[in-house]
Every structure is written in C-alpha cells, then in structure tokens.
Length: 275
Length: 133
Image (cartoon, rainbow over all chains, first blue to last red; front, side, top):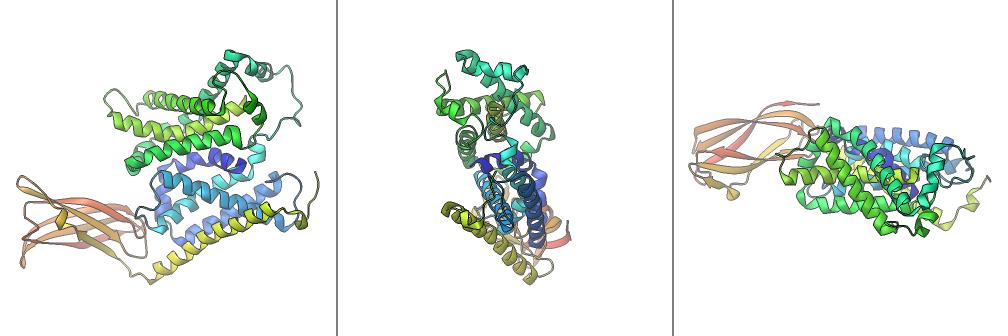
C-alpha cells in the first residue's frame, strides 16, 4: 500500500499528460517491451540504493523487489486508466500496453523509493526544535487551529501539483477522451488513494492520525475534506489559468475539476503528511 | 539493520513475488502476442465501414456513421480517405476524410454527411495516403 501511494504521487503527472497517451498509442509492442526492460533496470537501481523493504537484502532478492515494484506500478496504471475509461470498452490491447509502458518508469520509481519519499516514521530524524515547521507541528493537536493548519497544508499540496498540470492544458484533451460514465469511478479512486496515503500506507504519524480526536479528524472526514479542498483548489487554478470561466458549460467545468482533483487530492494527502 | 537470507522470506512475501511475476509476465505475454499479430498484418491495412442502419435523416441530408479501423502492422499518424457515393456504377459524390493518430488496431468513429440516401446508394471508402509516426 505504501508503494502504491508513493507510485501514485510520483507518476500521476505523467499519466495526466496526453502526449504520453499518444506516444503509448503509437509505439510498437517491441518498443513497449524495451521501455519495460529499461524501467526494470532503473527500478532495480533505485531498489538497490534506496531499499524497497526494511533491512538489507541479498543478491537476487533485489531483483525480486524490483519486479514487485514494477508489478505494483502496472496495477496502479491499470486502475487509473480503467477509471478513465481507457482500457476495455473495445480498446485494443496494444493501446493498453503502450500507455502502461510509457508511464511505468516514473510510477515504479515512486514505488521503489516509497520509504524515502515520505518517511515511515520520524524517530531516526534528529529534529531541530527551533525549526519553524517543528514549532508549528505542535499546533496539530490544538483543536481548530490544528485542523486549519492541516487544511492549509492540504491546499498547498494540491496547489503544488495543480500548477504543474493546468498550464499545459492537457486536461481538455483528456476530458474529451473520458466517457461521462467514468467520472464517478475517478472520484471513487481519488477518495480511495487519498485515504490510503494518509491512513493505510504506513507513512509517518499514521497512528497519531487514527487516534486524533479534533474536529474533521476522523479518517472519513479527513479523506472527504482533503478531496473537497483538492476540488476547490483545482477549480481555482483552472479559473486562474483561464481554462474555465463564466461562459464554460457546467459539465465541462465538472469534468476538468474531477480529473484534476484526482492528482490534486493525492498531493493534498501528501501535504497533510508533510506537516 | 539485519541481513536476511531467502530462508527468511515470509509466505506473504512469496505470494507477493509470485503475483508480481504473473502481472509482469502477463504484460510481456500481451506484448509478444501483439507483436506476432503485427508481423502477420499486411502493409497498409485500413478498413472503412458504414453503419447505414443507424443513418439519421436531417432535412435534405443524411448523417451516416462510419468507423475507420487500422488493421495494419503500424500505428498511423495521418491518413487521407476518400468516401465515394455510387448510384449503381455512377459516382455521385466524393468527399475526403482525414484521420489522425490511429494506433495499432485503433478505431476512429465519425459521421459522413451526404445528400444521397444510403438506403438507395452505395458508400465506399478508399485509402488515398498514409503517414506513419
């Protein structure tokens, strides 16, 4: 679960670049296999140096770990592309193959470095008690102040990702390719991944989050609020860059906001973890 | 940190590894099957089919749904197709259609608008030119 969450964090921007879809549509199966092999080598290097699991591994176990990271990345991409209506539904297997091959490297690298992207626990870190973020971390248990602090962190995380996706306007192309019936699946996947990142992936502070009693700090409420914040930030960024305005049809606004809120909600969840 | 041998692998880790081999193996298998199908294909396979039963009449025109299917061994970056409308052997109308970014086995749906009723006329698509990526 930690690997999947990390893979989503790293790889989602690539998935939301329509050029990567078109590239995947055009490459031959042999090219796809070459990309897959290249991704495996990269992942193997990351697994060896960063460590996919706790403790030292031996010899061929690194190869097995890298294979697991690649498999997780493939499953994550299947879930994302399926929710976007790009697999099945009469689509030829070569399209699925090509799109997975193009996007698998960043996702598998994200899976491989899960332990380093976001710490499992912070006990090994020598905290600088005078550091501003550490001083503010004490607010987390301070009722509404802590809740506001976390909401701000979620918004910052969502904003961080939105401003990297919206300016290139691939969302318009992706929105035209996603069937209308698939948007509820996108929302569901967004909520599921957001919950996983904050409460199920074993990142730092998970036990504290489960035990938190402040307002909006139950797992369900935190997941929903992170998603709503991601939606609001998505709408704001879309409006700021002129991708939606008062003349835009309501359904077009809905499709773009829901699509953008998927990566934004993952980043919002990561923002929570960062504090 | 401790070094662990393969004897220390738990059942869950073995299952995870086996499932991973299955997932990656399935993807490699799909690639090999697709590659063999690709090599069996001809040089420039592009089929145009018309679904005349779904034709919608709008005033003096008829909207005929069509599908362009890439059956060749390569993805297509652009294709020019002529759609001809015949009354018996007599060519009544021709129109050019351009299709872009058609992947392997990819399909592109569209609507051909004509003033001739497809129930009494024959529609045929013919390939004019192809560009590969």
